[in-house]
Image (cartoon, rainbow, N blue to C red; front, side, top):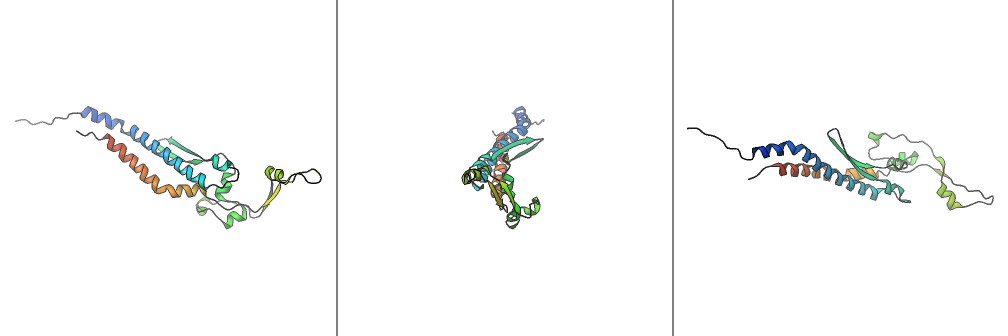
Length: 175
């Protein structure tokens, strides 16, 4: 008497296993893009608004770097870091939630800077000059990017976990 096991669809199953890493990565990247845009949207809502430049500069990104998928929010607007971390003695008095970890260095005193916008608002004095100098002691930390990420941490973990489960479930060959 001889016994045997018949495997049907084994070649297809092996192809699915071989394709799994690529399908899993694509699934996670798609989900990460959506999550990064959600975080960017929350950061935009929390960002200070004067003329909209800061809010409009916040962009989501997702990159695959050597087997690691990285996503987040970035900006090319130089002033953003000052609003995120705070500046001067006002920033020291109203620090960032991750102050100890980030350890930003701030000026200990106030300072004067030039603002074209202020100069336009003030107009010309009796000598036809414009004065756009402004004195400040800084700004408090707004932590709009940090707060958006912290508020999304649980959702990110759940959503990425679900993407992995969905991708793996799709690979199971059922009869």
